[in-house]
Image 1 (cartoon, rainbow, N blue to C red):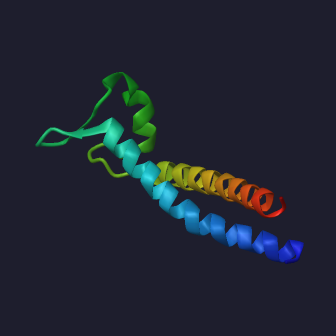
Image 2 (cartoon, rainbow, N blue to C red):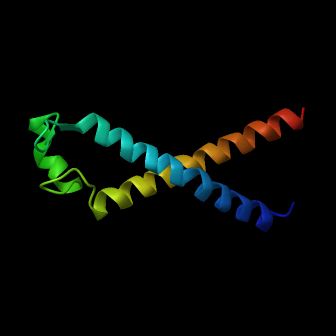
Length: 96
């Protein structure tokens, strides 16, 4: 496999793995930081409300564009390094 084909394969695998990782990170942060009290949503840690207001909408728990982009970038970042780690692990196994 040439270097270009290897890079294209890494990019495709990063997108395939990065999107579910980003969705998982988003669901985990909503589970950790937001609680439903029956009438509305509140932050689980009120002292962090100044920070969480930047990432979540004011009256409901939906994420805003900044939170979506940051979790997507973090998912791609984790996915890329996971793919590179697996690639080096597989090459070490088969080159012995």
